Image (cartoon, rainbow, N blue to C red; front, side, top):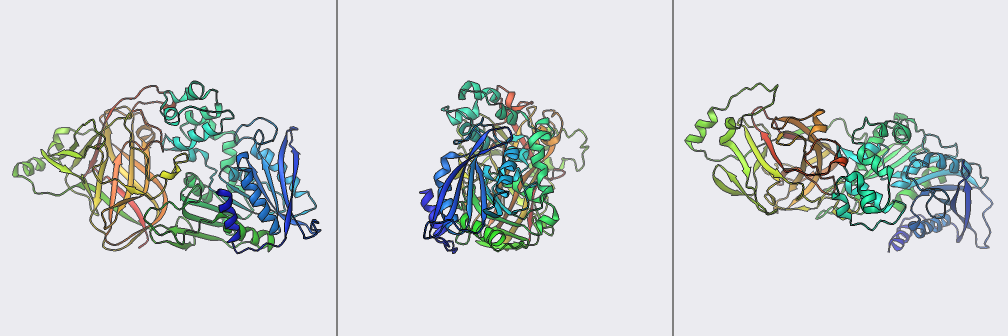
Length: 612
């Protein structure tokens, strides 16, 4: 099915075949240490079966996925017939290449050896590099030292800030990297996926469940800070610095719901200005597999055809031998249109700030008297809050065994649904919202950004109604009076406390359409101690920020904004145990009582970049 889809993309690309047939051959290229790597070559031939006498533009791909060889053969056939030489090499230890498979670290030396060999061939005129995901990594690994014949590189769905690909404020992107480790361990892993994610301590899951030791996976899960040696030396440090040295034109393609998107954008930010001036950036409404994942949204103009994109790029830089003019395009979700930009992110986006607060209701005289006793000012140095000072406006979930219980206790009255509001001005009254976070019963990732094994749950998808769980608090705005085009990075700022020495907080921003159905826009997470940068004293109030990836999303007049706050987003991120210390070494969970504060001097809010 995938091969048929790829062939159809070539057939519908608008780029015609120039040759009637092609020839496939194989090489075993010798690396610097004597290891030989299996390399496939596809070249055009004419009607007589003869090779063309002219030198050819060549496109190089380096892959660690031998299971995709049939797909590469489809590309080889079609590219050769369109006048290219297509070269596919398998990384050491994969396919029929010699050596030991060890992810990432050999790709720079092996890649440079290969592309320099290609540069020396008399049948090669100019060279382009193409890769998606790990195949883009193999391109980034050499992008700053490519030889003169390389005229352009198309690198899709990958970023060189590997720490940011692995962590969001101390929270490990577990579905992506644990599933990838299980699938690419170098030996067959038959262990249950969910059991593997929940195994404690995670540092021992490889030997205890998978059947072999993976030191590189242990390095990932134990190096939780950017300052750790693992990220600050060797290959990952070198890879992080490469974009600032690249001089060749680049075509960077990303998807709003691709799990590498955040790192891809940091990579774009790190490019030299001179390189950006001759490079392209496209960000589409698709996931890692180029599938539009926007439920109940028109995607007619999504432009997710990768074949058409690479043919356009390589026709320009290899066939026509032109230097590209800089181009930036972002796909607007909800509007089904592409927007051309001068820069990304745009510097002139205005912030639309929405403050969290309690629902307004008629109050008893007793309640008003009690609220009048709340101090207007407070010494925030200790950030310790006395519960009696805001007892009358406490909003608290009932503790139940059911994950779907939707009733709450609020001023001795039962209410269902929305617990709070989003307003353009902060409320004067203080409010506290309490819920129980039990790691054994997490909020399941649905409508996410960074899932790989569960990729079908990435995207803007229909969300449950407000009040669907007792450990998810919702804040909802009044209907919008005009369309809002979100264009950039949303941030949530929360004043929080917990009765545990460390914990996590999540935020998810949604659109509630006039139909009443909610669809997610962006979400993210933070761990408390990582966010504040020091040990946490249980019971004290701290401000944390939850930073979301950039997005272009149009909300329509009459829609409402919704913000959900909780403490888990599993398996997109690892389950926080509510214990302090390195998450991969912790061997137990504990239940946390979480509190969110709003109003008065607690300006809990979301900040949304909007261009309208």
